[in-house]
Length: 146
Image (cartoon, rainbow, N blue to C red):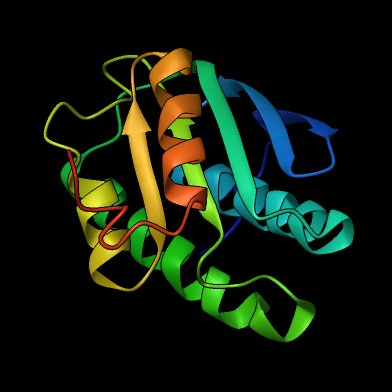
């Protein structure tokens, strides 16, 4: 993933004892999404959290199908690459987004899950928090119950 010339996405990070809350704003681009995902993973490693609530309702744009594919693939691979830094593949990521950034078909989510990442996309923060609690209870197939 290459970074864009301009840094159009911004993250605010709010670490807690078990959960990292992330608020993202700005214009979506694949490069910026990759850059900010790595920034988020750095915080996950630093604070040793197992759950991430990513609130991207302040992100504008309309990612295409290939951007969704590449982002999902990049995110899953990045989580695997951060295992040596203490980020477990079982770290749960809940994304709260609005259409058109949120894909109603959840293609990027599917790509990432198929590559071993525990992630779900939601249009509602309460549903995201409920899933994070259920997923962290180590239920079998916690990422599969849509």
